[in-house]
Image 1 (cartoon, rainbow, N blue to C red):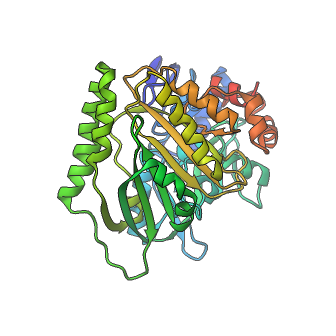
Image 2 (image 1 turned 135 degrees about the vertical axis):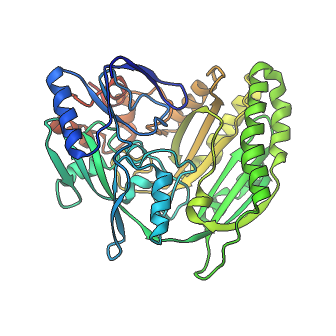
Length: 435
């Protein structure tokens, strides 16, 4: 296939590809890398295309890893599973559950591939369990010279430290060994709360719950909160009734939300009223279900997103500055602002590297203009020394990113060693990692 048009899930990035390949195994990945190098074409692997940045964009060869799927082994003694890199998270969750296991933490979307999610720094929420990349125990990569390397804390340790969150800049990941835990249930409590009341005790709430997040509706003083906690062994499942799940998660959170965003796009001045209604549409609910069914939320409405990480104690200050900007400008914001907390980790390019973090994410409907909202939020974020999510929209370059990531130069040194000619490069990586 030649000159193929491609765009990501949200429509924020697009490109014309010289070639598309769907390798069926690691040996075919090697063949494609060697062929591309011989032809002077750059190579990028693609999962679900769910990143909002150009991290996976190429004008050369796009490797679609959809055929490299499935769990290949589970080591119950070590508590780890070895998984092919192209496995979508929703497939991985079901396969692990069939064997009585689960990932200890997840984000709220499960459409990404495991390799794509870890390469861009996907995380969940909660101060006790770090994000997906921190759970990686070993990886197999195809490097720019066509060699296949297995790396771990004891084998090629620097490459391992970099490749756990590698931005696709080091090679093509074909297999990941990741930590798993026995399958568990979560008890979910979801309810609306006034914003300022919530912020008065947000740090205590984050510490008191295994997983905590909330959504603030701009132009209102309302939030929707989510507290997810593990339950004692032997607790029975009490999932949402089918009718309630269809009402809240299908009709209100997707179909109705799509409609209201279309209205807000055509009639921006209706946004305040829409948000006032939306912030009251979801009533309190509680249920107990398998962890991955509680963590994950169906997201059918397309959007663009920017997310930044800050020291955990900065959440209130940053969010109130964003609220002040929204209240003093004429731009109408129809999407809630998502706020989460996360455990510290030791992954070199992680946004939570060596600090407990809070995350604030802003969104806009994919049919809307970016406006000044994203730039204003980024200015606030930079002023607080924030770290942008690698897979979500931002404009920062290598100089700023070096200043907020202590192991930035260590990562670049590994990249210089394994891909000196930038076979796996692209314009996004040139901007964020430097030439």
